[in-house]
Amino acid sequence: MTTEQRKINTGFGVRSTARDVLRGIDLSGKLAIVTGGYSGLGLETTRALAGAGAHVVVPARRRATAQEAVNGIDGVEVEELDLTDLDSVRSLAERFLASDRGIDIVINNAGIMAAPETRVGPGWEAQFATNHLGHFALVNRLWPAIARGGARVVSVSSNGHQLSDIRWDDVHFEHGYDKWQAYGQAKTANALFALHLDALGRDAGVRAFSLHPGTISTQLARHMSQEELAELVATIGASPTNSGWKTPEQGAATQVWAATSPQLEGMGGVYCEDCDIAEPAAKDTVLGSGVSGWATDPERAARLWKLSAELTGVDAFTTT
Image (cartoon, rainbow, N blue to C red; front, side):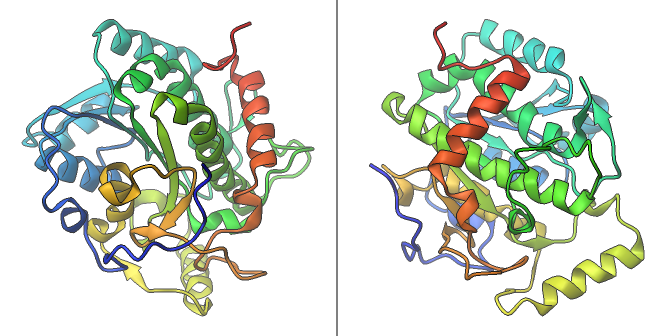
C-alpha cells in the first residue's frame, strides 16, 4: 500500500529535538548505521540513538577524526568508508556481513553541498556520487543484513531538492557545471531512492523514508564563501514557508523520528519534514516547505534505480 504524502499530525514540530521524539522508545538490542555520524546532524543523531540504547556503527572517511568525535558515547563503533570509492563501500559491507549481524536502522546522513566541480571514481560528479551513488551501493551491498533486521532506511534529503529534477541527459554535468543544480539533483536522488527502495523492500519488512532536516548552521556549508552564504540565508529567509533556523539537536529530530517512530508503522516511501510527513510543495516553491512532484514520482524513482545500478554495478534485487 502506498503511503500518502500528507501530514499525520504527530504532535511534534519545528522545535522538537531528537531526544523529544525518542522519549519512551527503547532501542536496546537494535543496531543502527549512521553515515557521517560524527559531525553536525550526524553526531547528534548518533548521540540520540546511542542514548536510547542502540548500538551505532559510524562509517567515516576520516576514521581518526570520527573516533575522536564519538569518544565518550557508549555503544558506538567507527568503521572506515569513502562513499566515492566503490571498493571502499564493498570492503565495509563485506566486513559487516562477516560479523553476522542484522541491521535495524540505516540513516544515510553523510553528504556535501555546493561543492566546486569535482570528479570522483570513473568521472562522476562528486555531489551525485557522494550523496546518492555511494549510499545506493552501500544499502544494496548490506541488503542481506538490512532485510534480516526488517530495517528502516532513512535518506537525508533537503528542500534543496526543489532546485533540480534529475538531469537525465547529463547527470554528471559534463556539459557545464552548476553547483546548486548539482546539489538539487543529488537531493532529489535521495528522495527518489527512498521511494523505490520502499517499493522493493516492503515485502521483506523494510521501509524507507527521505526527509528535509531543516535549516541548520553546520559544516555542510564549508565550500561556500561568506558572500555565498549570506545570499543563501537571504533566499531561505525570503521563502514564505521558511520556519526559521534550527539547532543541530532540532535538525537531527526528523531523521531520528523517521528511523524509530511507531507513528510510521506500516508506512514508507514518503518525504518528511519537521517530524511529520510533508505536504506536496506549492508550485514554484524554492527552498521552502513541502516536496516537489519530481521527487515523489514512482516512474522517476524506478528510472533512477536502474541508472544507479548500471553506474555502480550493484543491485540487490536483480537475480541475473
